[in-house]
Image (cartoon, rainbow, N blue to C red; front, top):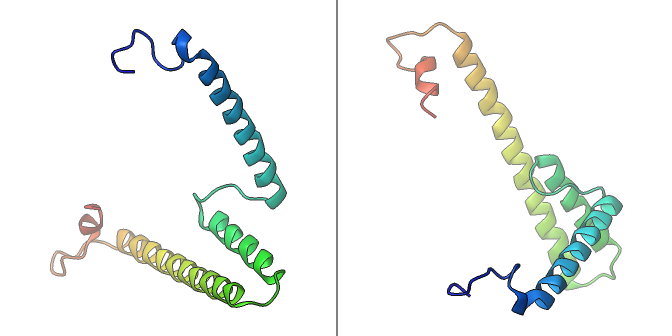
Length: 120
């Protein structure tokens, strides 16, 4: 394809394949929007959205018959939730420490003034 005059999308020889790919891509996007709306899920970009994903998984797992796989799923979700809470707590504490360090006047004797925080 690299030696062809046209790319995949504009090559007359692959026009039918390109049309099928576009149709399937549209179907996938519509399905993603429908599922996201049904589950009130927005993606994995925030702590809240990851928490929502864990909630969905836990509720679905709780509705299943009791089994070893169900127990493992619930334990994994619990561990992931605990890690998420720990990470969020640490992030909050770091932000608090950074804001406190920026608000105090620099002390040249301790080497922990605001200039040290600006290197990140």
